[in-house]
Length: 491
Image (cartoon, rainbow, N blue to C red; front, side, top):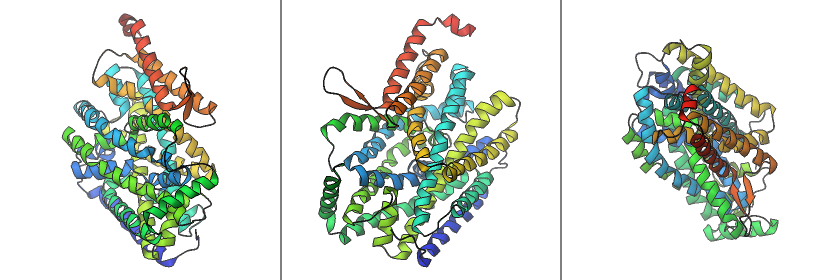
């Protein structure tokens, strides 16, 4: 992949980056309320987003720049196993359709802003609230950092090296997010998603024709996997359980993250969420097409220093400079939308479930908004420092753990929507065992998310996050069953 500056590609990239920067600052006056000095307005856009805005916003923060870079990179490296993201993003939408409108109504009726608010309102436990909130913040930080990994791959392809371009991009992001709150990424998401659709559709239409068709693409990928002795176009028999549990566990975790919940809570009705559960699978189609770029990298005979370079290298090699600049801008802007929503979600958690709970319980709405704004800046700076001063693998490992961690908040957040049987001590005990037990298993397996099991027959591997969730629920049920209600009330 060429890493010299291409003036045409850079010019197109800068044009679109300036466009979304202007939109970010204009967003503070888009559907402007009487005052932004309220966390409902700054952090949730006034809970007023309709079907189309929610579709672009949730899609924008669910399908991130790192997804655009990482999914094809995984397919390029391991083949069929990398396609687990497809069933994962199919399974998740029935879950969204059934659960999220109920969660939205609970949040709307009681003025809840975060998952921690919902848990505290249901169980009255500061300990369980803090566990859920802390898990959300910890799991989100490396996720934001990985948006920078996606942006770094694009900047490298443009010939922009060093720390300064990345720092400038995130400083601009921090400023307009501080000013406009959730309205900024919601407005920018329109541009970002349209650009990504154009770039991917063009890629899957044009690139195969330049590489001898899809038959040659698949044959080249199969030959490359065979030559290196790993990866394949089809799953091996010992991969089925791992593939299925990874997809299912990832689907359950996806809408437990603060950024996806922020998009849900910002919707204007439960029906808006249901409509989006029907419409959002269009992004799954996009993701499937995008994943095929991994195979195309083999057919193009790319020489890569990192698998993360496969998508930028394809656009740079097989398209004219102006379109490569357009595609790079789409990917980079695709980092800004989720990073903004993630920082807002983390800031809302800190403000509501730590600052208000422990530091200043009497804080007024304007004070909450101010704390959230400042926290969002700190979160972005922290993510930037991780990428600048720590190995990228550090963020990758933490994000891997983040999916396992955030999955452990599901019982506390979701079970209370349907039953009052569970109580805080049991759910907190389950969270503790699932969180730390899952962490230990990942560490013991060399930071791999799969655990080998044997039930008397041939061994098989399962996703540690799902395994930890099962243990989490079992512990919660046992503790809840053996602990008298009176003891809970006294606690």
